[in-house]
Length: 341
Image (cartoon, rainbow, N blue to C red; front, side, top):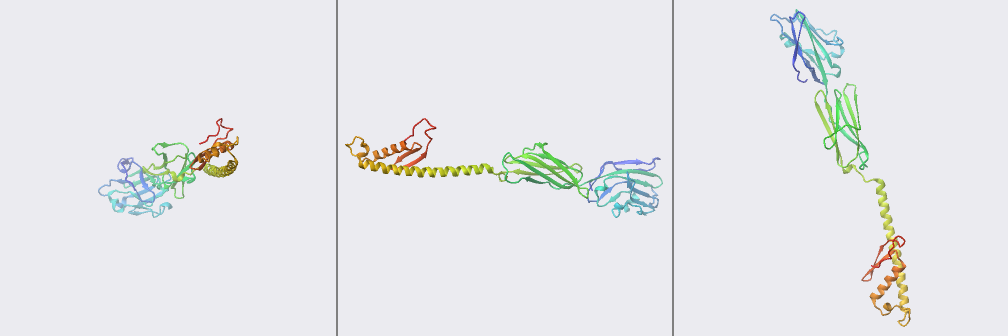
């Protein structure tokens, strides 16, 4: 039971008796015991045999507890209050006629009237407010894998067994309140306690944090939880991945095929040139003087020039008799002739 506030006084029509009750509602925790305070100032010669006390629901007049003739009178007590009510019997003689209500339920919430009669009669009402704290929110991200920036994801916040209905607030990484794309539902269970279910729709951004705050308006209690979308939630786009892998494989295969073709063509060309060079004579008009003199560098230059003329799509470079083949633009796409490196 939570502390009760200020008291108010009620008088009988004749003004002979004053009853004191809390001015503010009595807030009681669900499942706990609560005390509905009610008291009066007895006269010096007061006897419990002269006291008649009735506690009842203000609206329905349902009997909650009754005391008269020095003992409890519970024959007509409402069934929902059986074995749940008691008085502070050792304090009745001092005018404390407060009611102890055990194991408070949601159905107990409301107004209770305290009727007191000794010689004069008076009554006053006490309001009982039931409250239950909400559990710490549980956050889930759906889907929780194969996400990529720009995808639509749902962050779900769930808190349970609270009362009364909660207020739910969403915030981003900077603590700014989020008010759009939120769906919240609150459903009472068989005990009357609420389960809160709130869903926030977001566009995925790397390293973004979302917080869910669940607030109990009566208890001024606030619980919260956060979820951060990090790299482990993000995946490389599946389509882009396959496209990249496919292109890489094609490029590698193309390079291997071109290298093989170029090597084969160069070998055939070299063999042909060597054969022609062996038959050629310096006295013949069509002979190549650079080849006929046996110069190694001249032969290499000649071969490279001949290859570049026959295979314009291949660049050929030579250093110490090692040939390197590189892809080059097609002559139809470029106005420049093949380049000899």
